[in-house]
Image 1 (cartoon, rainbow, N blue to C red):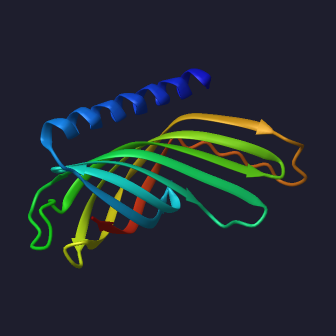
Image 2: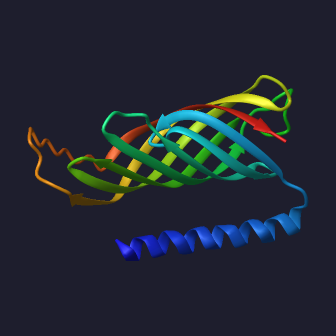
Amino acid sequence: MKDKMKLVFYILLIVTFSISFVHQGFGQGKVNISAGFGIPELLNIGVRYQLNQVQIGLSVGSMPVEDESIISILGDVRYHFGGYSKLSSRRPWYGRVGLNYIRDETEYKIDKYIYLNSRIGREFNISNKIGIEIDAGAIFQLSNEEERKKPSSGWNLNLDFPVLPSFGIGLFYHF
């Protein structure tokens, strides 16, 4: 697991340096903030940096569930393509790929997951600054680490699904 976390760290470090070089080469980018709901990012808030038709983002999410603590962290890259919008220079269709870390803690155990998230979506601009985004795709489980805190008192149904559907809906604002 430590090797996978190192790999994720190095990938994020490379992406960060790439953003810096792309920013210097192509000029001023834009910052976008967002809020929404999705699987696997849950109820989330995020920030994205945009250069032309590419966005690089980070979001943090959680879910208010009784007797359970869930956190989701997602880093992703979006490429906008296809069609035109009267209210934005950004094309409305996008492909999105990213890495998602989920930590789910209950009274009995702690589960940690890393997923590869892949989606296609569309933005609908309400104004030149605000819009709604909807996307769908699949997540692929890269790793799962489980830590038992104490034996479960009831049923222990442990289903392992390496590929799951992924979707999201959100509101965004770009500066």
